[in-house]
Length: 482
Image (tube, rainbow, N blue to C red; front, side, top):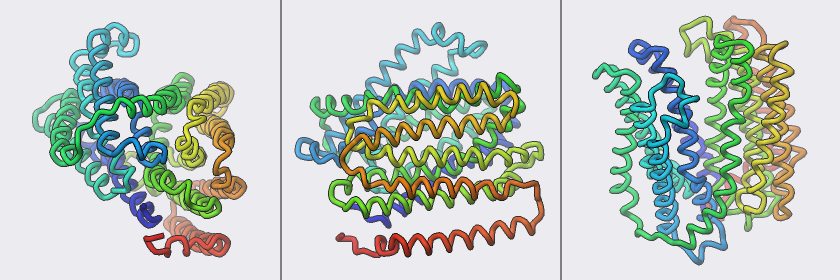
C-alpha cells in the first residue's frame, strides 16, 4: 500500500512529464514553422481531432476499469493482474482494429464534411493506423500509475514523447517532408514502443484472457463512454462560438491562453493519476475524517498552484514567447485557470463515484448540463464581451457541470464524509478571488518581485494555519507500515 509521500512523489513526476510534453510544442514551434505551412498545421489539427475521438472509442474507457478493478475488493479473489492486463489490452486492441478498418473503408465518405479539402489518404489513414498500437502503450502506462510505479511511468512517458519529437524532426527537417513526416513519426514511434513494451513489460506476466473479467470491465466502462464523448465536445463549445463571432485572431489569443493555462491542467491531472489508486486502496479502511483532511489538503495545494500560474502568467508568456502580439493573452489566463480549478473539484468528487460504480452511468448528465449552460452563456456573452465573454461562459458551464458531479457523488451513501464540502468550497472561493488580484497592466520588475514575495509569504502562512487546524504534518510522518 503506497504512502502519501509516494502519492506526492508520483504527482510531481507526472506533472514534470506532462509539462515537458506541453512545453515541447512551444519550444520546437520555431523549427517546425520553418518547414510547415498553415495548411500543414490545419491537416495536423484535424487529424489529431479525429484521432482523439477514435482513440476514445478504441480504448472503451477500459483504462479506468483497469485502475478500479485492481483495487476493488470484490474482484481480487477471482482475478490477478495478468488477466486484468491482457483482457483489457486485447479488447482495446481488437476493437481499435475494427474501428480503424471501418474508417479506412468509409472514412473518405463519412468524414468528407469535416475534412473539406484534406485528403483522407494518406494523412488521416496513417494517423489512424497508430491507434490500435497505441493501446499497448496506454495499458502499460495506466497499470504503472495504478500501482504507484511513478518513476517507471515517468520514464515511459518521457521516452515515448522524446522519441516522437526526434522522429518528427528527422522526417520534417532532415528528410524534408511536410506534415506527413509528423504523422509517420507518430506511427513509427507507437510501433517501436509496442515492440519494446512486449519485451520489457508484457513478457513478465502470464497471458490470460478472462471472459468473466471482460464482462465486468465492459459493464463498468461502457457507461462512461457517453460521458467521455460529451467531455470532448464540452471543451470545444466556447472555441467554436468565439471563432464564429469574432474570427481567427480572437480564437488564436484564446488558444494561447488555454495552452498556458494547461500547465495547471497538467498538474491537476498528475495529482488525480497519483491520488486515485491510493484512494481506491484505502477508501474502505481509512477513517473518513482522515481521508477528508487529505483531500482538503490536496485541493488547497492545487489552489496555490492555480494562484501561482495566474499571478505570473504575464512573466511566463513574456519568457516563452518572442511575439509581443501574444502577450495580451495573459489577461485571460487567470480566468481559464479558475475554470480548470473548478473542474479539479469535480474530479476529486468523481473518484468515489468511479470506485463504487453505481452512478457512473449518469455522469454524462453532468457534462450535458454543462454543455447546455455553455451554449447559452456563449450566445449571451461573447458578442458583447469578446474573449472575456468566452472565459466567463466557460466558468459558468464548468460550475454547472461540477454541481451535478457533487450531487451524484453525494447520492452514493457510503463514505459521504470523505469530502469536507464546506471547506472545499471556501478554499475554491478564496483561491479564485486571490488569483484575480494581480491582473493589472504593470510590467515592472518591482511588481513581479512584490508578487513573488507576497505569494511565498501567503503560501507559508496558509500552510501553517492549515497544519494547525488539520494536523497535516502528522499524516506524512507516519511510518510506512501504517
